[in-house]
Amino acid sequence: MLTLKGPSSFEETIKKSRFIAHTACVSSQAESLDFFESVADPQATHNCWAWRINFQIRSSDDGEPSGTAGRPILNVIERRQLENVMVVVTRYFGGIKLGVGGLVRAYSGTTAKCLDRAGVIELFPMSEFTIKAGFEWASGIHGLLNQYSVEKLEESYDHEGLILKVRCREADFGKLASGLRDACRGQVTSFKN
Image (cartoon, rainbow, N blue to C red; front, side, top):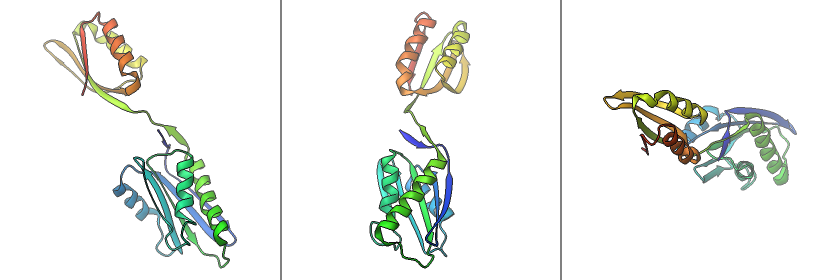
């Protein structure tokens, strides 16, 4: 799944109209509303937006002719296969009408340039699981966790040994579990939480 590295903004003037795009990662409709309220200007002519969150989509032309703003913004997000992303493009009308094609080009172009500035990262599905092993295997386990770039969430000990709660890429879970069994000569248990 692709998403943004971080928030970004981009501004350009097209035939005297000022277009300001803002983009950010959002993971819920509530977050999208908060983001919209933080960047939209009530004094602007239009605050058009689109988002794609968990494979659901929404967009708004905010008074521009139907299909000339929100949908072009959304098309750019979808063409780039981005997820959990919102773009808000604010327009200050400059007195020259752009026409349907001009509006589509302005909103999609401003969106594309804003997304270019933000950059893209690939997210991988993650799994959390617990590892239990004797004290004697602790250093070998920690070395293996570093090899797979596993995030340690919690570490504790009981009378039987080490207890680790960790997070790793779901695709690496099977290889990691197999490596743990080999490193600990079968004297380890790991299970998904």
